[in-house]
Amino acid sequence: MGLKQIYNFIARLNKRDNPYTIVDEQVILTEGKWEGFLAHDQVIEKTIEIYTLPNKEGERVLAYTLDKKEEVWKTYLKVFSQSEVLYITYETYGDTVEAEDINQLQGAAYYLENFIENVKNKLASHEEDKVRHITGKERESWNSRAFQKDLEVTNQNLQMTNENLEATNQNLGLTQQELLSHKNAKDNPHAVTKHQVGLGNVEDIQQASKAEFILHKEDLSNPHQVTKA
Image (tube, rainbow, N blue to C red; front, side, top):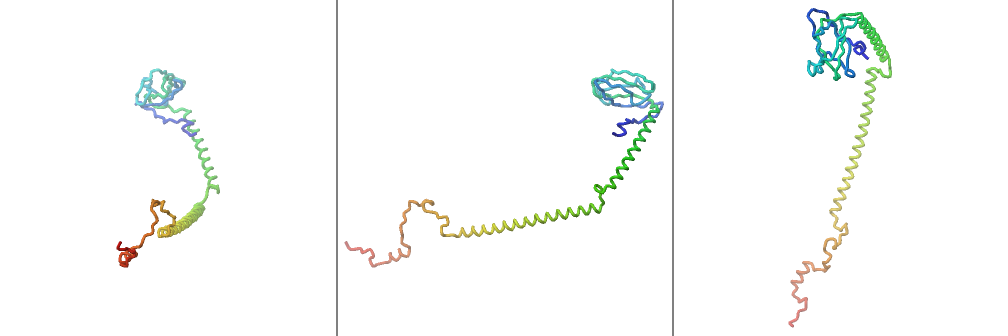
């Protein structure tokens, strides 16, 4: 928890004849009610205006009461509304500095002194911590080792990739060789029959070659033994 939460300091206003105007002092209601001192002293009560939205917008709230406590320079306000937040505008001639204000300042100074001392102790402890706090040279050395290790792993992966690529190329070479050999094969490697190619009804009749046909055509020795009858 910080100083603002502990002491809730508000900037004080010097007293003067010409009043200050405080705009939209915000208050949070609980169960339809808020009560407490306004942030500043010497309030001109007739200038108090309360609205449900900033800049005097929304609904104006008239359900409130004013009271003077022992500190007559302060204004104690009770306000009633169904809104969760209200905004109060008023005029004031300035603040009155009390012993309480001085005590708060002294308390804040003591708090800061202890806080600074604790921070200094933590910094000193951190500086001496050799586990979490390393020197620049140590960090460079570790980073260099990590980079070298990453480089070795990358090289190994590249080598494996090259080996796989070579094996793939060799397999492709064998495949191309086999494909070319199969393409040039004339010995019916698939054992295709005439029935498979639609020639099942064609009779296997031996025919003479063209050369034999020409010889037979030019043969004048009556090879068929044709008679005059």
